[in-house]
Amino acid sequence: MERVFGFECGCDACESYGQSLEETEESERRLMKLRRLKERIGGFIEPSGRMTDGRKQVLQTMSLLSREEGLFETAQRLEAVVEQNRIDFS
Image (cartoon, rainbow, N blue to C red; front, side, top):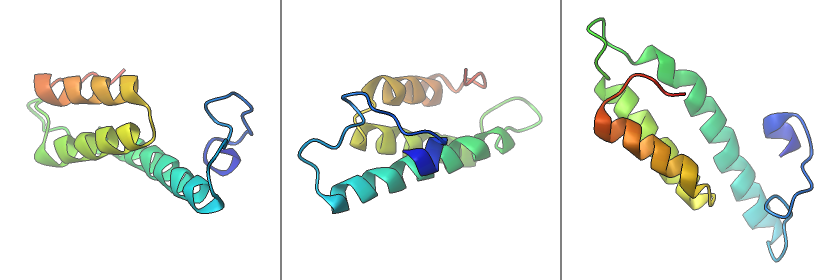
């Protein structure tokens, strides 16, 4: 968590109750990949304003990683963006 977001969180969701070191490291890898993908999504918009296939693929990957990480609300929002082919990601 600290490596990905720059701080160590102590909430129940972030605590590693029952997780092995391997599971914790895998979670950290997913979070880091989500962060990198989020930085990339702005570059996938056509001049017409439509979402490119590249952006759609990045958003779908982010949704999958979010679900694997238990971030279901985030995954639903990402899926809605893809489904509606919207530009606004906020």
